[in-house]
Image (cartoon, rainbow, N blue to C red):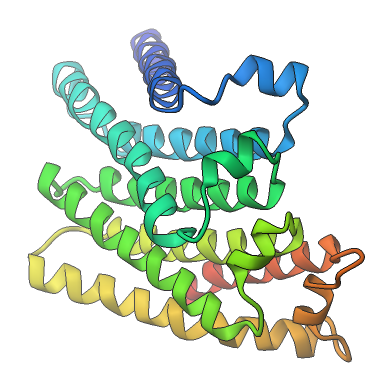
Length: 281
């Protein structure tokens, strides 16, 4: 790497950290009840820690989408960073509203995290943030996209996550809202895995070169449909191949001690299957 290249790399790294600080401040301002230092240090609030880690991961992915791709010159790169960086941060934070109102809508997420220290809610919100970060990475990283394509892919991506939540609720014999509200971390982990898997698939679809609204949205919808179809297939395969003779659903909702290890394995199945879908479809 030349000296000029090294200086540019350091400059972009400074921009990345600046965007991260802006994203952190945005989260703090939009969540005044989340007194992070008090909750994490004094109250040892694992639920908030999980949600916050998911947000930070989504934020890094969003910033990565802004910074990735070939350089078009310092001035043009700076304009893109100043334009798309704040846009991605706003859209990532708007995903909180989508989660609260349309995905985990049967209880108050903020109350569950702050007052009840519900780690199941925390990891579920982390799944929404991470999935949204993956979608934004794809939507912001394309060279031929615009602000309007970024907004559109974020919007249909959120619709895909909502449908994933509905599909997951449909394929499980239990209510994810009831289980998560009763502090079932195992169900939250499994559900987060499904959301992240769909976000990974939709993010890949959004990253394709933009040709036209019709062509790209048709491709995006096709990937979303494949993801929704494979969700119950992966769950069935996990039951039969990875845990033969065991019912995932029964283990996740055992009254005495839901099996977190089983949930982690199911989460792995969803996420790994999303990579196989991306590589094969």
